[in-house]
Image (cartoon, rainbow, N blue to C red; front, side, top):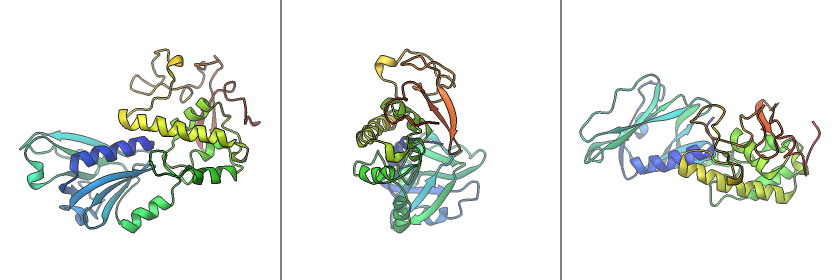
Amino acid sequence: MPEGHTLHRLARLHTRYFAGGPVRVSSPQGRFVDHVVVDGRYFDHATATGKHLFHHYEGGLAVHVHLGLYGFFDTHLVEDGAEPPAPVGQVRMRVGRSGEAARGGPAHVVDLRGPTRCEVVDDDGVADVRDRLGPDPLDPDADPERAWARIRRSSRPIGALLMDQKVLAGVGNVYRAEVLFRAGLDPFTPGNRVREDDFRAIWNDLVALMAVGVDTGAIHTIRPAHDHGDLPRRGADRPRNYVYQRDGWECRVCGTEIALQTMEARTLFWCPTCQAGRGSASR
C-alpha cells in the first residue's frame, strides 16, 4: 500500500497539471458514476492527508481517493493537438485538461486504477475523513500531541500504534520499520512504556524522511555512514533500507540477522540487537 509521501507527491503533481482550469473527468470502467458531477468544473487544487488524496473543485466539491493495496495512477503526457491514448484495462477515473486549457503545449492525463475508494464528497465529507485520522507528519500544522496522547495511554506495541491511521496518518510498513530502527526502539514496546523523548525523535524523523519521499518519489532512510551501495533485496527499483524486507540479511550496523514476525496481521522487520535497548519488551 502506498505510504503518505506518495499521496502528498501526487497532490503536488496533480495541482501542477490541472489547477486553474476546467478538466474532463470520465470513468472508462463505468464504476465511478459520480464523475459527471465534477466533469467540466474548474480544478482548484489537490491535497493529501495521510493515505487519502483529494481533488478539490469549484463549488466545494472534491473527489476523494484512497488507493488501498492495489490502486495507482498512470500518467500520460499528450502532445499539443493529439488525442490521449485510449484507456486500457480497468480505469476507474480519467482526468485531463479541457477546452482551451488543453491546448498550447503538452498536457497531462492521469488514469486511476484499482483504488479502494473513489467518490465525490463535499467540504463536510472531506472534514469527516480528516477528523478520523491522526496527525500527518507531512502537514506543517499537524499537532503531534494528539498522537502522543493516544500512544502513552495504550498497551498496544509501538510497532502497531505507528501503523494505526487514527494515531498517525500516512505511516506505512516501511516507515514504521525504519524509524523504529533509527530510534533504536524495540517495536514490541507497549505504548505506555515509550519515553516521550523517543516519541519526539520518531515524529521528527518522520517529518524529515517523509518530506524527502515527497521530493524524490522514493523512501530514503539509510544514514551515509551505513550506506554500502548494495542493491535492494527485492530489485534495483526498490528502496535500500535498514531492516524493511531485509529479513535473514545482516544488520547494516551490528551484523545481527534481521528478524521477521507478524504483528497485528502486518509483517514486521527489526534488528534484535540494535533495537534491544531502552524500551525493550519480551516477546
